[in-house]
Length: 344
Ligand code: ADP
Ligand code: DP6
Ligand code: CO
Image (cartoon, rainbow, N blue to C red; front, side, top):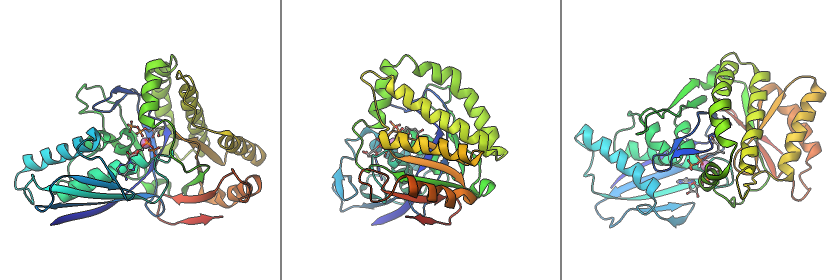
């Protein structure tokens, strides 16, 4: 038996990927940019085993059996890894051995906290290690599992270029700065609701591309400038500019989700109260100390610098008392440099 276990982190986009130009190859209509969180608190853990005793490829996700060969995304990731292994020659074991794969997320799955990003980055990296091809360009393969997954293979801030080539060869993710370049950057995750979202990201963005009249304007006229501006803010560690672009992009993404017909609504009343809290906090502080961003779900991700964590958490405790049913459940601070906070 040949076996490999890996862990992979989530990443939270500050310029959102939303919309595909090719559903099969998972090619996006716009660039996106995110920060990869440390694996201390939120990650996927995947074990893959190959054995001549296995009769078929089988996968378990969080303890439940899920389709593997019948899932075109996982099947394609495996096919691509095997293609590289075969091209390199001398594979570690016969490529026709069947696999058993077991994956667990230690955070809510399909709740808008980037489980597909950590999950497919982990699957691809685990398979790459199992077949001995981990040094190859893997972002292109992870992208074909879940678009956002290509950004979880690197640390720090990561830019996924949409690329122009119809075969996807230039739709790759690259690091903008390493975690140590902005080492006091932190993320607080506010879990408002940990249940599975009604409309998956895949379905939500497909409906949005099909029905929204605003989405192309965003992809063509707005995102390119935002990517340029936020890259500059990140490289110069300008938190004020970084925060403004991040919050505006989150708001715009949810606006185009609402422009889908029928509308896709991911944020709830508590999410909106958190956004309001952030604006009020910054206003009272007289400067921008914290930024919110929401993925396709109601849960909030707050970006802030280490020295502001205590103040923001104290404000959150006052605004969202823990015993208040339906409010923020818990808050976790996720640093990118390996230290960890437990708030609440
Ligand atoms: P999220 O906002 O959590 O990324 P998505 O709707 O994008 O939600 O994707 C959720 C799907 O991602 C799950 O239903 C599952 O198919 C896949 N997924 C999540 N975690 C893993 C994992 N650890 N390994 C493989 N696939 C995963
Ligand atoms: C709102 O990568 O989950 O989180 O490519 O269909 O698997 P698929 O979608 P996915 O979409 C992520 C959408 C987002 C924004 C982002 O992470 O950039
Ligand atoms: Co996802």
